[in-house]
Amino acid sequence: MLYISPTSGLLGTHRKIKPTGTERIIWAEASGESLTTYQTKIGKLGGLICWENYMPLARMSMYRKGVEVYIAPTADAREEWTSTMQHIALEGRCYVLGCNQYFTKSMYPENYRSLVTDEPETMCRGGSLIVAPNGKIIAGPLYDKAGVLMAELDLEEIKLNKLDFDVIGHYARNDIFQFDVKDQPEIKKEK
Image (cartoon, rainbow, N blue to C red; front, side):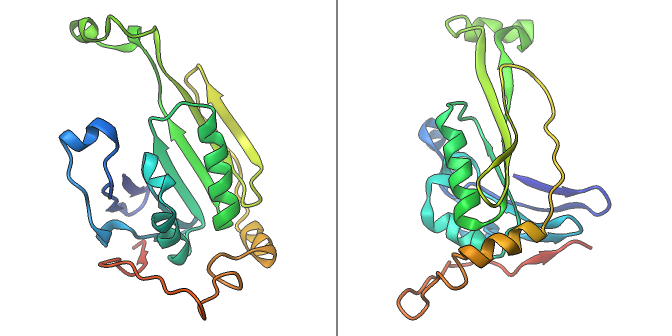
C-alpha cells in the first residue's frame, strides 16, 4: 500500500505482513517495519491490506500509532466485509476507508480474456465505503458500478467517540496487558 501526498509525493509504503491464500505462493511475509502511520494535514493515515484487517494485533498496532484515517484496501467484495469495516471504526474510534475495485470480464484487455472465460461477467463487485468513528456508514458501500465516494471527515468526532471508548486509552488496561510490535517505526510526518 502506498501513501502519497499531493504536495510531498511518496510518504511511505506498507507491505502485507501476511499474504492471503494463493498470494503466499508469490509473496513473502513482511515484518513490523511498515506498520506505521503518517501525520498529514488531513489526519494521521495508516491501515492494513485485505485480510490483515482480521488480525487483532495488527489492528492494535495501528491504533497504538494513533491512526485517525484507517485505509483498508481489499479484494473481498462480500457484503460481510462491510461489518468488518464498521467493527474497525468502532474498535479504533477512527474513520475507515474501505476500498475495493469493481471489474468485469469485458474490462480485461482482449488478449487476456481467454484467461477468465470461466469467470462470471462481474468478477469483483466492489463494495468501497467510508465509516465514521461511531461505526455508522457515511458513504457507500458502492457495489456493481465504478465510482468515487466522498465524505467530509471531522477529526473532532474521533475525540468525542474516544470519550466513550478508547482502546489505547482508558480501556487499554496497561496494568494487565503488555503489547509490543517488533521493528515498528515511529510515526512519520509529512514534509
